[in-house]
Length: 394
Image 1 (spheres, rainbow, N blue to C red):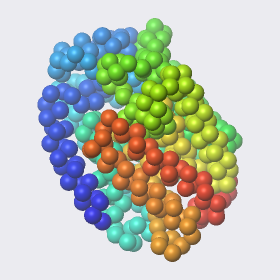
Image 2: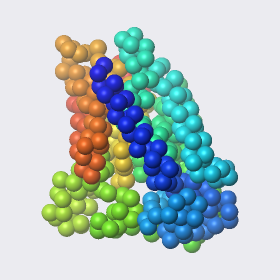
Image 3: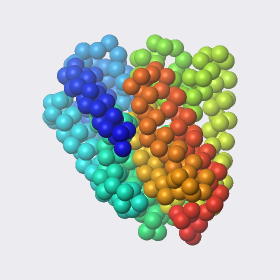
Image 4: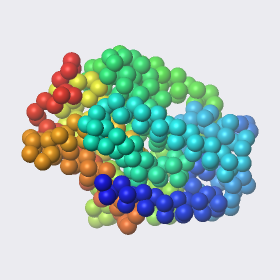
């Protein structure tokens, strides 16, 4: 009970710095606002040109020598185009309200699956969502991770009700963070959940077509080049600062490999290690998912996707609230004298809740927080006794 209070204290101090960053235009929302403006003003064809983005941002918001570019599919800019009619700070506040609304809806829905926590303390689930440090960073920076969390919650609810087609369509709406969504969709394809996959594919193709129409073929090629420069081409410290993507600050397998090896092996060796570990996680997730219900597959796949996602920062950990809370609710009755497998899941879920505090002390080495996600994933693999959320009509 003390941990949420500590987290709340950290958030209060964090908001002091966030307000100052907003005044100086140094929040991530800068990129989304600029994308909406460029789309609305007829400059969509330059949406992925770094120099053009920097020029527009400097003229609209505040001067900077480098900035985080807009690196999502173009369809997402449609959400920010109406906000670009407002001044930057006003648009930021409007999007903050939207993010808070998404969190409230997520809390209302998640409470359906946390009856044990609700009986312990009725306020526990809402408090855990709101004081979770990645949630705070999402709100402070104007990121979209709260919207992605809501999408996953709605997807989980659809799977619970047996509506896999709707679940697949809803999941595809999160393709603005395709590095997280695609591993989940791939796992459901391997699990042969055909209605889910059909809904996902049809909706995703529509979103890709919309993005192509919005920016054109040339800008689409520029987008591919931007993604390559932010992934396999991201070697020098200068590029990491320019693109705002430090791999050692990523709480995933990529961050763990690069952070632990610390340039002790060539870049090719790092890529091989990341690929091998990611494949191992996906294979293990596939095998474990065969023994789970359809809705529980999503919980497992979300944890796996958080690990194998090639691009992930602290705010992206917001999506882990869904599996973390549902699994913690299921396993906390085993503490302290229940089955060890369930106690391990509960302990790892609690550790994952607290791990983001490392960001306050070692932000440049935040890859260490990925160990907590690995712990939860491994504890799920070792949970061989069928829990009540598993094997309910695979």
